[in-house]
Image (cartoon, rainbow, N blue to C red):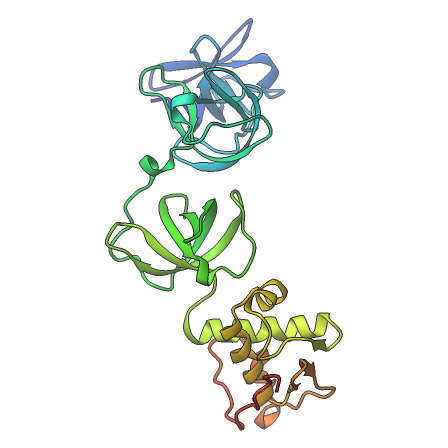
Length: 309
């Protein structure tokens, strides 16, 4: 069976004036001359993408689309009509998003996250911004802490809505979002929990010790990049810390305390300063702040408050 809207491995069956006909299971599809690889031998196999032309006939191409049927992608709107919008998906023929499949009407120049799907009546490949109907229900055994791929599709006051592993719906709460994200951004994330409504709570940083270690290394890197000093302290606004470091104020204070206990920084009412010399941990190993996640922390004295008085 030849699948429309997907990449198919087909056999070069016969030549004709318009191109080469490729076949599988008794069915054929035309690969136009402009896409026929030089030296193609009849009987050889070829990976091609199959879609429908302007007359709704199946046609093959060696071009690669940005997304196939069953996948999501962020695409640019290149034209609009009274019936819908045309999006650039990497092929000569643009992808059409019918007006009924647009949750919010698209305009020329927009970038929209869409689901690529097959119209049941016409067998045309189309795009839809009504994404909810295309999400799968996550498996119950999806483990908390699992690393997942995220595609941002909407930003709300509650948080950032994401497509998880190109299959599931997830949410990164605003309280856990410390970097600017926009629809179309692709980032890594971590499963927090599976909710009763079948959606996933997602974090952008690992939970527990791994997340604390990551914040500590991020603060250390930021100090090095800024010449060894940052004007951040207990009295700094959470937004300022988030913009500079991409972490919460709580995470910053925890990371600063970790670096202080390892004598890597000094803390004052005006900011945090990297010390000139970095003492190694006992036994000559590297400081705990530089270890990989999971390394055990040291336990020197607690840091002084850096709150302004």
